[in-house]
Image 1 (cartoon, rainbow, N blue to C red):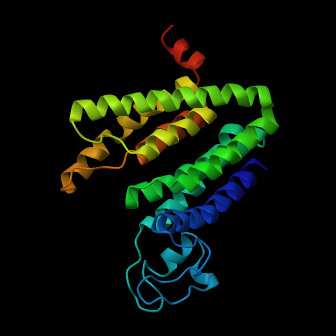
Image 2: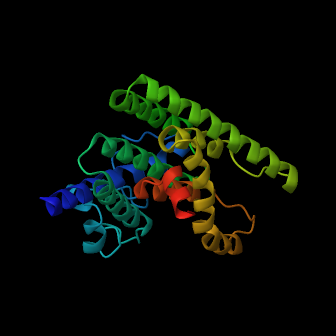
Image 3: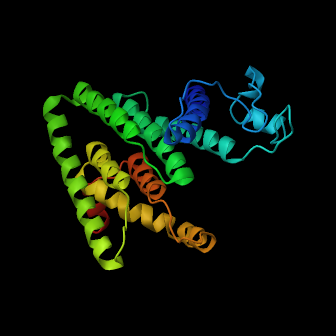
Length: 253
């Protein structure tokens, strides 16, 4: 049963990951996420059902469009696979509990943000508003309005802390050190993870992303890198490991 559920969540994750790729690519450009249907960006041929199977279609077609033979970016199947893995890990971490719903919603938002911020350096307000409201409703239903109020306080504190960090960074570097989307994103981190863990996600993401950022900076003539993906990585690690302040304090005792 456990293995069956694990496989199901992995498959569901890859399917949703395919859709999140579309949202992350189209929304920053102001395009509809529904129309036109999935198509080859080179020959505009509408993709058929067998060409839309997450991960497997890319493998069977050897990474090329079936019609014009243009190479397809490996970014698509990698994020489908990543979403599938994260959905499966969420099931392992939370089981079939209400918390699983919150985890999957939170991870879904982060996948879209990682795609859009990496590709366009944009974190869309529409994504933050939709998932922020969805998560607030889920928290209120699962834990009650009193708990939601506490989480909102944490969210505001996380937002203000990130805003302060941005202002300090702007002063030190004499230029824009952080995008507004990163600050708004921290509000949702506080809503889901709580205030201390939301702030910790900044440091976890920075540590994980440091070697990656060095490579990106070396290849980026403008020396600008998106911070959203690293924040997302940090938040996912904290979420799936279910870290909280008590656990961290115990590690030092």
